[in-house]
Length: 179
Image 1: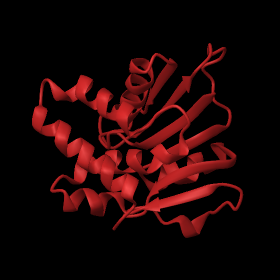
Image 2: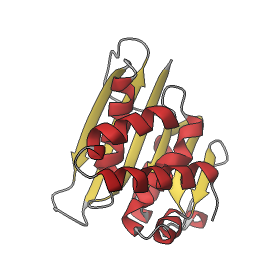
Image 3: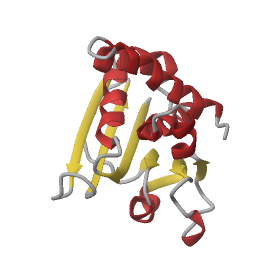
């Protein structure tokens, strides 16, 4: 089994963070992983994307031509990465700030989640990335809420224990898909 995942948004939206969480989740579950970040030239506000492969077998290539699933956090990323999801795949979209009517595909599952609004309800609009991660989890084969919880604990839990709870509440909001 293998999950090929693309994540994209503006710098500062936490794209690399959710990529790292997915990679850690796979690693802690003793899966093979590949995490490749790609930054635009700007520090914040520029483009950022990463690819993550989680596999139960050896990964022979880190290149993802067509992803099984993805998350896009802004309009330019939606328009750029919509075509990179394989037919039958799933794309989570932050519908708080992305207009999907400009471009659509009928051969993928488009999961529109008002992530910024849900994160704002938690008191941390910056957690929109984690809300989207929660919405993505049911569409992955090798990463689930328990493995994400272990990864969040490993990455932020020891340094900022209060952020562990907030991050996991955001993931649960995404899993519930409620607005």
